[in-house]
Length: 488
Ligand code: HEM
Image 1 (cartoon, rainbow, N blue to C red):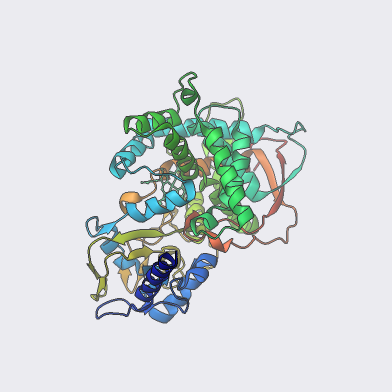
Image 2 (cartoon, rainbow, N blue to C red):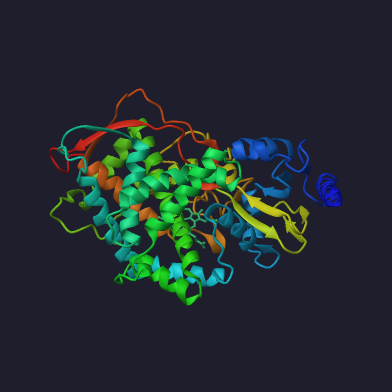
C-alpha cells in the first residue's frame, strides 16, 4: 500500500515538473504559463476567455502559447494568417480534441465513424431540394407556434415574457418539429434542454458543483429518453431528418445506446444557436430605433409582407433581396458569435505568418483561433467594434465584403460560422430560419420593451468558445397579435 502511494506521488511529481518546466525554444511563440502549476491560466480562461485572451494579446501580440489545465494552447489572432491553420489537414487534427469534449459533455463516443462520412451525410440534408423542404417546414412550424397561444388567452391581449426565452423557445421548438420526429413533446424537450444547456460550459470545463453535476446528469438522461425515436422502440417509421440520422448510425454499426446519445449531440448542434442569435438581433433592433425603422421599411417593401394566415408558407428560396436585414444579421453575429476553432498539432509544424515570420508549433499542443477577438472585435478592421451599427455590412444597398487589416484585404472579416472543412453545415438553413422568424414576428406581432429605457443584458462570460453567446439575465418585452395585419 505504502509503495503504491509512493509511486503515485512520484508519478504526480514527475507530471507536475514536466508541465511546469517547459521553456520557450527558439522560433516558438511567446510562452505564458501562469503561476499555478499544471492549471496555469485555467481559472481565468474558463471564467471569461475573451477578457483573458485580450489581455494576453496586449501583452504578447497576435500569437502566443498559454498553459490551460495541463494543455498548451497556441492562440493565433491574426486573420491574415488563419489559412496556415485552416488549410493544414496533415499536421493538424480536428477530431481528437473535439472527441474529448464531446465525450465529456455528451458521454458519447463514435470512434468508428469517419468525420468525412458524417459530414457528407449532413451536407446532403442541408442543400438543394432537401434544404428547400426543410425551410418550408420550418416556416410553417414557426407560423403555427407564433400565432397560437398555449395558455388559452386571446392572442390579441398583451403578454409579457423575456425576449431570450421567447426567441429561444420558439426557434428551438420549430426547429425540433422540423428535424426530429413529429411528437407532442417539443415543450418538454425545450425545458429540459435549457437546464442542460445552462450547465454545458461548466460540464466542458469540469467545473460543476456537486448539485449541478447531479442536475446535468439527470437532465441528460431525461433528454436521451425523450429523444429516443419511435422506430427504436419498435414503433412505426417516419420520414424525418432524425430517422435518416438513425439509419446512418445503424449503417455505421453504432449500437442503440450510443445512437440515443448521438441524438442529443445533434439536438444541441442544430438547436442551440439560432434562438440566441434571434434574441440578440431583435434586442439590438429594440434598443436601436433607427435600425428597427430601416428593417421595418425594408419588410414593408417586400411582396412578403402580406403573409396572412391563409397564404401558403413563403418559399424561402424565392430570391427576396433583404440587404438591410442581412447586414443587421451579420452585425449581430459579429458581436455575439464566439466560436473557438481548435486543432491538435500531430506533427511538429512550422506556421508561416502573413508578415513573413515563422513559428514552430510543438506536437501535442493545441492551436486555437478565436475569431471573436480578431477579426470580429478588432478595431483595426471594424471601427468602434463594441458598437452595434446596423449598416456596417451595407454598401450601396448591397452586402459589403471589403474589409482590411494592415492594408491587406481580408478573406476572414467575420467568422460566426467557423471556416474551412468544419464550417457550419446548416448555415443557409439557419440564416433563412432567423430571417423568417424576424419577418413573421415583426409582421404579425406588436413587440415592445416593458421599460423603454432598458438596455440589453450583459453577456454570460463563461460561454465564450461555445458558439452563440447567451445573455446574463433577460430583456423584458410585451407582445400581442397585431389588430391589423401587415401594418408594421
Ligand atoms: C446562428 C446560428 C448558427 C451559428 C452561429 C452556427 C455556427 C456553427 C459553427 C461555428 C460550427 C462549427 C463548430 C466547430 O468548428 O466546432 C457549426 C457546426 C455545425 N452546425 Fe451550425 N450554427 C448555427 C445554426 C445551425 C443550425 C440551425 C443548424 C442545423 C439545423 C446547424 C448545424 C450545424 C452542424 C450539423 C454542424 C457540425 C458540422 C460538422 O461537424 O462538420 N447550425 N455551426
